[in-house]
Each structure stands twice: as C-alpha cells, then as structure tokens.
Image 1 (cartoon, rainbow, N blue to C red):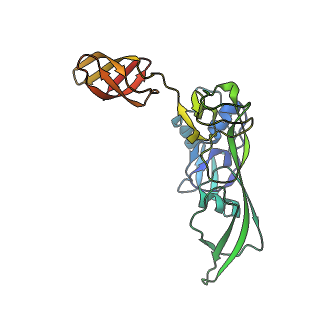
Image 2: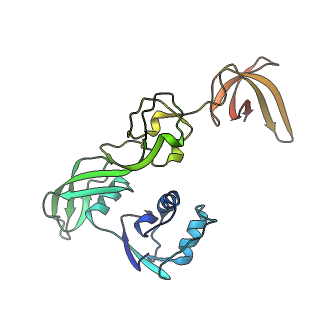
Image 3: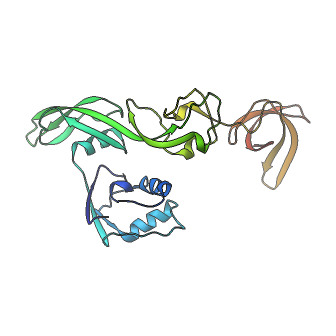
Length: 263
C-alpha cells in the first residue's frame, strides 16, 4: 500500500487501495472488503488490521507492507464519477467524446450499470453549465459455466469458473462460486455463459409427501410430532406440513433433512 492513494468512492473496496497477492480466493474475498474514507483521510495499520479481523479475515499469515498511515482522497476522474453515479465497484471504461468541462458534476444524479453512453453536465464557479458525451464499457468478474448445463442441474465446483465478462445491461450476475454451488439452474446454459442469480433456486432437501419431524419451541419446553410435507423445500424455506396427530395443516421452516420447525 502506497503513502497516498485516490479511490472512486466511500466506502471503497480494499483492492482499490492495495496490491494483493496470495491464494486467489482469499485475494478476491479480501479485495472486496469495503472501507470508509476516515474523517481525517488517514488509514492506519491498526485500523486496517482491525477491519480485516472484524470482517472475518483471520487465522492466516499476512505480510502487510504500508506506511504507519496512508492518506486516502476521493478520485475526481471521469471513471470515479461514473462509479459513484452507478454504485459500480468493478471495471468501467469511460471515453469522453470531447473536452471535459471544468467544475462539479450536476447531472445525471444516477447511472444504471451497463449503460452504453451518457451525457455528463458540469457547472463551474459562475454557474455556467457545459456537457460532454461519454461512451461507457462495463465489466466485472462473473461466474461462468465450464460446460453446457441443463435446466434443473445442481451446480458443482467442476461446472463453473470465474472470469471477467462484459456487462451490457444491469443484471444480477454471480461473482463468486459460493453464490451458486449447490443451487439448481432454472434455465439451460451453454459453455462460458454467466450465471444469473435470479435463475437459481435452492435444492430441496424435503420432497412433497416426505415424513418429517415437526418441532415446536416455546420458552421452557419443546414438542416434537410426526408430520407429512405438503410442499418441497430447501433449508431455510417455509413449507406446508400436516400434523399427523391433529391433521392440522401449518407452515413450518425447513431446518434439516426430514426436520421442520414452527416459529
């Protein structure tokens, strides 16, 4: 980490302020950690280390090369402005189609990721406004398939990898294998296609018609009765079950294989 660095916004991903090396998955996880620009603009070693620990980065051998405190400022480049307008934390290329006017940005107030072009309007100290058109190209690390997968397939480690992809419109792409492993595909995918988060569903661990144990927890006591699942459900999902003793149909949360809980 250098003594002075500019970042695109606050909070900012650690990867914007540091050069990271080591285990690829750990580098990805650590680089994605978000930090706020300190009020005085100075990030100290202790603050950084405490943040890493609080975010769950622990139990590793870490070599940290940085000054006792580094100064962090807000980047005012076009790329940084576009990132702040869009909330985009990955790569965006900005090509101005003319000279960039001086002054502060006054419009637009927001920008959807994936937009191909935009007009940025600036106002100078006298209130005069000028505009510049820009071409935009967006990309991000995304989970893509390593082979054709059919709808209904449960994704395994061998099915996917991570690579940089071009983003043409705002869409919920998975950026880490952890987001897709064990999930069921809702559509066919060809080799190299990105995996959309909204095309995935959890894998049911209880099927309709399965026998289940229904647990009811109350302060001071616990009741367990046998039941029948009337819906399929994954862990954490709510399904209908029938109490085989009272025949009542109730909603219960899937908590494990063959087990549901009323809350």
